[in-house]
Image (cartoon, rainbow, N blue to C red; front, side, top):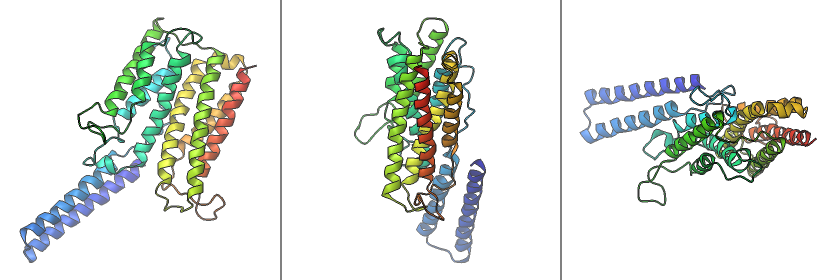
Length: 332
């Protein structure tokens, strides 16, 4: 992907030089009216600004080996919380879904949908932390840091300083997410020092897996709906939006569940669920790493044009089935 971006930037640079040369040559050979030359130069600048800017800004990071930095990890804390916080911070530092029309990223669609998918998975985890994992059998008060993080990570990801319905400047989505990251870090810091709760019980893990399974079910329905609505192949310009949004969710869940498995390692081993857990993680990783050059929404039985939505849905449903098998093993 980086090689493709570099190539696009090179081609657009050549285009700019060609247009500039053409304007200069025409002006020298047959002097044109000043407004015409200014218009040609403006068009060239717009092409470079948006074309190169979009190529430069577009980044879809699906490194399945991503690890939180030392400033997120606290010995004795939760590895999954550290990963969720670091993942949100990474995306918020380069947030695209709320960029205004003057910003080159406003023309992107794959990256914004991917980032919104990651934030959905992360906010779902934050909610489950507050409702179950971060409480003692649900009878204690919700942890204030987890309550704050859950609220901040649910913030509308498309909000810039001004939105479609607000005329007074408001907080941007990325600024809210970074505050949510700090709340997660504070919780993890307190957990490491023994001032917070992270209840590593089998029933808590089962409840979280059930929530993830339900969310994957709704993602599967979205894939099915789009696959049945169109079979325009490479010319379905909405298929990539669905594909990358769900890819983002799968990537977020793959990283979080990887480290939930580390947090609950003793419970999983005690219930003899380690093998099926690894199979589930393998399916999630495969789905999260899918990255076709162009997303195609062909017929499921098409000969020449693939259906990337169906392929993604296959691994998603495989992971969902294995999630249920893990949950069943944990009840025994």
